Length: 274
Image (tube, rainbow, N blue to C red; front, side):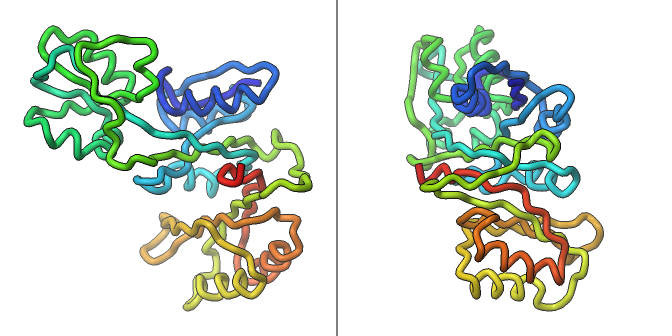
């Protein structure tokens, strides 16, 4: 199994891809520099992609949500990875700190205690590399799992602003690569779908929410994304409890499809229920 994910090595994406890979008999990782490039690797360069879709602090990962509108992709699995950062330094009094911009935002309370410049990097791995190359007193914000392979003069562990910070990743394939999603007994499922804004009218979203409520379908996520055509026009990314084959979800989608185009992105085991 060829797994595409966001590089370079040492990222939380690699951690997620390896966790998914351990469920398989054999796998190889292929790193790409941007999320768009990761998804573009399907299907010729990779059999599946493992990409972040939501962080408990930062919210949804918009490029991934938007990609579902542009290409016939399917979500086949999800997994949740704890996000923990450490501040590591070559001196107890660093004069600058290297940090990837997302990591900086998630560790702002710790960084605010240091009255030194924050040097933004393209990745957590680059922050670590620049620290290792620095001959001046410096520090870096790095994923906590990096500490297993390196030693530092000064370490502050678990500096993330939110103690229970997590990122949810999804496994994505093209429709041609994905196998039919059969419902397994005793497994809690989640279904992802897109409601495409092709017939905009007043009350559009309310109508759809009322349909889900009428059939007692519990929504776990609702995100509006601009269509890119004009102001006020949005697609809606929705996640709900259950499998698309469940009678309640099937009935709700039948009614919604009378008014708007619906793209079912897949039903897969709910990682929060395991």
